[in-house]
Length: 361
Image (cartoon, rainbow, N blue to C red; front, side, top):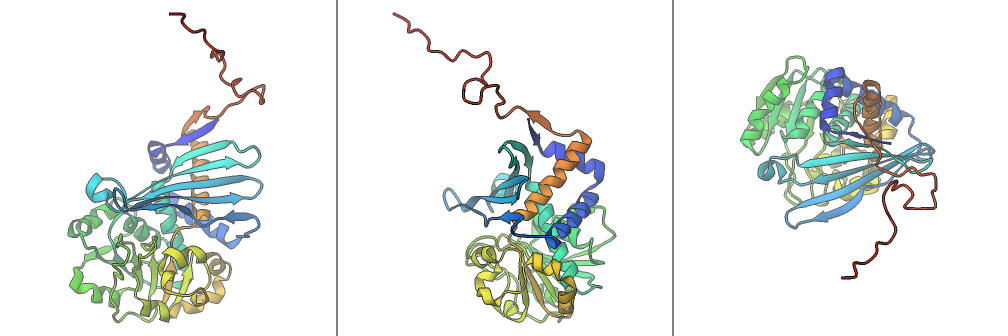
């Protein structure tokens, strides 16, 4: 049987454990997976898929990972930046499938749009916990869309965030951010919205900066070259497409730049602006050697977050574990079980598969 976990099932799980509880578990599981990561035991491939501009700019990609000897995950994700304004739909829509490597059977298909936002926030939280100043309390946010919510939520789990200074090119999206944050189980946070003329102020006041925009390819960067705190840590989340960039090259040249997946970041992350030899440790190395990299907490650092299939495997398995525990999800006989594996029609029990006589008329 294959288990289907839809968005209503995710809602049941969240009601049972709390969205903060689920996020905390995801941060802990992902940190543990990164600390023990071994490419020979957990194999991931760079994502690939279709990029297109008809009928509009978008992509559909797949992101595979294999826990060797156990299971494979494949997340399929669509990114269509016009969705919120034109279709009242998230710009990112995703599902994740889990397969048993013993026989190839499809074990699970689950909603992954919410999971993608959560795991992206969790990855930023882990990088922030290693690299940001311990008492960082002011978070700058450029891009107030869906990802801003989980970024703020996740970073508040690892740093004492007291104030958020936020900007979006859409005033309506920016103005709705405080009400979206009010739904979370956060300590009181002062959310201050600024206009484009105040981006310099945002940069100068932030201890941690998160950029999560839908900037068009070739239209960046989205933050100005301006004075900033010496210890600024940046989570660059929005660059996920060739030609997209959010951070000025001058910042990257001065910073320790930590990619999640180096090869992928060089193609579609902030690292497009750099050479491979300019990059610092990837996320797994950063976590495994946390003590060594804490010395960068007083310097400019950037986490180049393009999304890693490992994160999707961890998130899907966490959701699956809760679904099993709570009896959530729908079991479907999606694939055949038969007493004669050599007969492809055997599983069609009770269905006439022989030729029908032609009507002589």
